[in-house]
Length: 168
Ligand code: NI
Figure 1 (cartoon, rainbow, N blue to C red):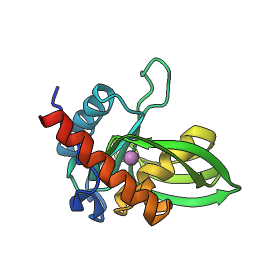
Figure 2: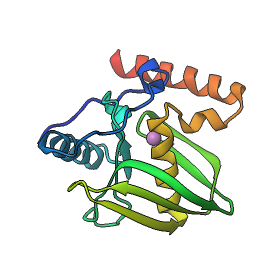
Figure 3: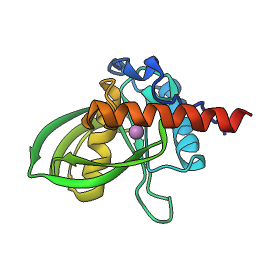
């Protein structure tokens, strides 16, 4: 088990655009295993490789109560999106901050699994929110980007203060 360090806003590395995975091999499967360990330990329900400073298009998610239904999406592509929903989001890279964000209500996404096989998934609700949130990370985008610049600045200051308190 290896825990990876999670980058925190406003770290500029979170703005990196991830590259597609060229081949799903043991190296990629190791990254996925480490990302899952890191996500469960945090604890969180989703993690994008960008957040652990690996700039390849890999996402892990588990929204199950028992934390036993890991979902992995490699090179995800959004094929369809419909409707709108608003929900409060958080992010392991923006600790202790929760804000309402608007997302598509239902989506259809295509990706590769850990075996390198292509699959498509149609989903809505929390899982759809989670996939959209993590796909944003791969583009260098954070949920705080949907908020006003005033609010984002307030969050940046709050996190800076929290960090100072933790280190002192
Ligand atoms: Ni996030």
